[in-house]
Image (cartoon, rainbow over all chains, first blue to last red; front, side, top):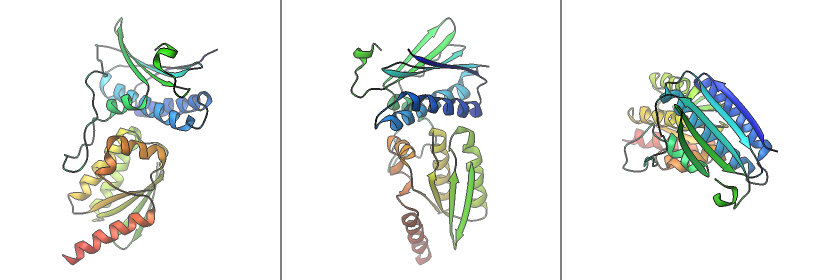
Length: 147
Length: 120
C-alpha cells in the first residue's frame, strides 16, 4: 500500500521550508539502509530547487505538491498552472573553478538532474507538472520499476 | 537562523545555526555585509550546524566571497557536513571557495593570509 501527502501552497520561500520539512519526514519513513539519509538529502535538495524555481519563475498564485511512495521509489510532483515552461530542457551545470567567472545562481535545475533518478515534465490542460523520482532500493533500474 | 559572532584580532568567526536556504539567504548576506561595512575582511564561516543548504544558500556564500575579495579580504568555510559538502562538490564551489575541515585549519588559512598582507 503506497503512502501519499499533498499540499496546496502560496508560493513563498517560507512555505518551501515547510514542505521540505514534511518531505524530509516522509523520506525518513520510506528509505531504509545505510543510504537512507543520503537519499533523503538528495530528494529534499532536488525538491527544494524545484519549489524555489516555482516561487521565482512560475507567476502562479498557488502551487500543488504531491509526495508519494511505494516499495520502489519516492515521488515528488510539483504542479503550477500557467503558460508552458519545461525546466528540464537543455540544463547543464554551470562551471565553476579556477579562471571562471564567479557565478551566484543558475545551479538549481542542474542540481535537480544530478540528485534524482528521474526527472519528467508534462504540460496537461494548462498545468506544468514536474515529477522527480528517487529510488528506494539500490541497484534498481528504471525498467524494473516502470518509470 | 542564528548567528554567533566571535572576534580574535582581525579575524571574525561566524557560527551559523539553521538552514541556509532561499528564505534565509538575504538575512545571511545582510549580516555579512554589516561585518564588511565595519571593515572586517577576514571571516571564518563555521557551518557544521547548517543542516541543509540549497543553491540560494550556496549563491549567498559566493556573494560573501565576492564582497570580501573586492575588499582584499577572504572568507573560509569550515566544518561542512556531508549534506552541505555534497552541494559544494557537485557545483565545484569547493574549488572556488576556501573550505577547511576544521575551525582551527580555517583560522590558520585566514591568519596566513593576514600575515601575507601585512608583509606587503
